[in-house]
Amino acid sequence: MSNNKGPRMSMGHPGRHGNEKAKDFKGSIGKLLAFLKPYHLKLIFVIIFAVGGTVFTIIGPKILALATDELSIGIMAKLTNTGGINFNYITKILLILVCLYLLSLLLNYIQGWIVSGISQQVAYDLRKTISHKMNCLPLSYFHEHSSGDILSRVTNDIDTIAQSLNQSLSQMISAIVTVVGIFIMMLTISWQMTLIAVCVLPVSMIFISLVMKNSQKYFQQQQNSLGEVNGHIEEMYSGHQVVKAFNGEEKAVEEFVLLNDKLYESAWKSQFFSGLMQPLSGFVGNVGYVGVCLVGGILAGGSMISIGDIQAFIQYVRQFNQPITQMAQIMNLLQSTAAAAERVFEFLDEEEIEEEKPTVTKETVDHIEGNVTFADVRFGYEPDKIIINDFNLHVHAGQKVAIVGPTGAGKTTIVKLLMRFYELNAGSILIDGIDITEFSRADLRSLFGMVLQDAWLFNGTIRENLKYGKLDATDEEVEVACKSAYVDHFVRTLEHGYETELNEETSNISQGQKQLLTIARAFLADPKILILDEATSSVDTRTEVLIQKGMEKLMEGRTSFVIAHRLSTIRDANTIIVMKDGDIIELGNHDELIAQNGFYAELYQSQFETGGIE
Figure 1 (cartoon, one colour):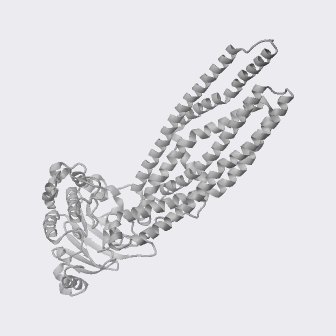
Figure 2: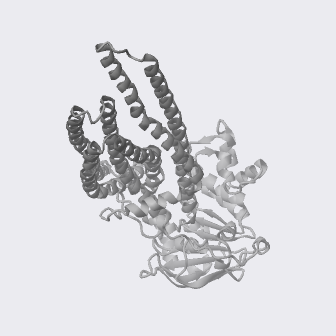
């Protein structure tokens, strides 16, 4: 059978690229911020609520200082018998404080609710964009990249972005406002103590920048390694039967251990460096705190500052260090976010299929007869490795054309080019004299019905799977198509008939039954041109005979390309193309080719000599 499907990455090494490359932190964050533009109005409210909630919290210690001063004055007056404590004033101050803190709580709750909505909406937009992007990428991209790595970008990386936005967006705003607000409040109390408190900032920033510089590459490697591990697991899980059949468990485990070790190395290093930020910031903050206490004691001893102000300033110093530590943690989050965002935007920046403006109208598409011409077609999956050489062929509408040849001859590649899954290096393909590049890809592919050797069905009912070939089909049309494919009887023997639910791997029906269903799906589409790529390779001989009868009826008056596995099934083809190394080496019907006693005759006779297996 033909397997000209282009280059693929080796098993267990999905999409290895960029592991050693330094991460574009600013560029990735900049692209991510572009996704936040539609939510600028909500972000303005987030800023307002965050600022409001933070300001109310900041002025709390200053107001509490009034109660502390009043309490200390009252105690001194009581000790000297000159007065007492003004509890009414203190109670009023405390009530004001309670109201401020409640208002701050309310504002923080509202902005947290808004931020959660924004972060999840951004994740929704990213997934939606990626979903659309997948439909715009050429097939070559999916041949060169592991599906597990792609899925990791859609799931793990976007989840990382959403969680980071949810945690860091409002915290960053609050932290900045807190630092600025507390700095102003400290200046109103004592510039000397403020100077000491501020001196620790440059030291903290130096430590943070050093840690960030060394940890960025490990966060990038962690995200890439996670994609590789997911890709390997996905491949091993989907192909577990093959792994077991060839005793590949040990090799699969060894491969996993290597990838897992690689993930472990990058993960512990990134987490180690990120874990350094908080203790380093805390240490520097505590040094500053000690200095503030010493200077405050000296100033209080000289009656240059009140007890309430010292108490308020100490609270501010503690609060001053907290947002600095918080910003260090946020920078840690932003690194993993940038690493994840870079992988997501790397996918979104992949070159898309160029969709020229079609010149063929819908009316023309509806009246296509099915004449197909290949004119001097040259193609290679890689520009320097041409596998189809000057291919020329004309097929009249309604003809049945069989394509045969050894593995790697280019049989499957020809039909992929016909459906414009790949672009030609040279030459042209015409349908009813119209170059296929003049059709939109959607209109072009609507002309074809395709059944591959790998039966593909999705999780859903049998009826839903069949209607994938024609979404607006009626139940009656579905059943007629199934009868043509001789699958109606099998479906009705199931407990729930056409409403039978196929599981995710469609393992609750046999391989032959899956192939029958995919053939029925193609019947339902009622295409102008039919492509059968090893369509009966997974079906037993008895079932194949039934399918052949249905196919003969289906192919009446319809151009059909049949990539043949069993040469006995294409004896009645109008034209048989014998391919080898990308070229047509023989052309004719069955009797003519047998009479030539060439390559086809040798292939045909060898099948019967070996029991009918190619």
